[in-house]
Length: 452
Ligand SMILES: Nc1nc2c(ncn2[C@@H]2O[C@H](COP(=O)(O)OP(=O)(O)OP(=O)(O)O)[C@@H](O)[C@H]2O)c(=O)[nH]1
Ligand SMILES: [Mg+2]
Image (cartoon, rainbow, N blue to C red):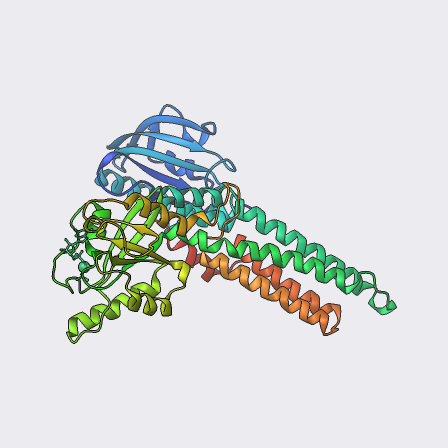
């Protein structure tokens, strides 16, 4: 499918600004001819073999040299976009880039929109939509884990799984349609139970995928952790210790932290977003009241809570009980702090620490990691859902299958069952982009950078 043969796009593909080199990218069949209009080298780029690199000069309209460059030539379909492409490596100076882009535009190219190269790769069938989305995620990944997840999606782990679900549905549909062909003869080939059991099998596969979303979201966006406890238990001290800097004010005065302080740390390649909150307590002070309110919000948004107690004072039952109203038990790590001041913790905690000496912090890291991740172990090849768009599409797909089962149990005709199954199939199609709308594509590719 050559969608854009004559529409030639150009953009800077490297970050704007000064650098060793900048790369200007051109794509669209005929782009080598356009490059030839401003390039002077030993060969014509339009005659050059695929995957070759050429030294030469870029000239402006008055035949003045703008820069010495290297040009890489790619031929369809073996290029990123699937079309003929050219990449011009120039000295990394924004002025040079600007001039060359202007020359390319007057030679007949136009400036690319954000994500347009990747969009073309998708429209030309080089990659599917889930893979195109993975490209953006690879670029924005900030941790080992999110990078691994994005690579896994670009390699097609999710797409393969979605395709196999699609095939199962297409199989069921063809059985339904076979049955429809013979409906007038009142013959029944496939018993309802068999269809239902096939549907159940697809539903359970979809469920398994939906279940990966918690993990997928975590590797993509990081894990939100609220540090909670009474005033003065050492929440800010713990945050500072974890960050290895004195980020939050620590003092003996209870009620020191009024606002929620948000910081990020990486533990073993996973991103943890820590919220140091104001101590939870009844207070008459308006500012502190607002702080307590914000703490609540932070707790609600968190994936889990570090519930900090002062080991000198014992377990704080009141705060624990109010925490249980917002968070499930297994989402709360009970920590006994200031362990350096006592012989041993007066109560059984998940971890005993000292935010002052650092004792027990490694153990706390381990506990945080295992609460967040270890319960869900996936291999490199497992399809993982990390994108809300995919999650919603899978949910819709499943709902349509549930509705197909209801349609069967009510004894409606095959036509209606087929309708539900087709709706389910369409939801899956959206994930990999078999059907798309302009809105959907704009939504996805607008988030890309220009030149990608
Ligand atoms: N000895 C010892 N002192 C600690 C420890 N952790 C915190 N402290 C002290 O306890 C006091 C309160 O610490 P903060 O970190 O400000 O406590 P907080 O929970 O953030 O308090 P608020 O912001 O007021 O809610 C400070 O004087 C800290 O130095 C610890 O593990 N050992
Ligand atoms: Mg504090």
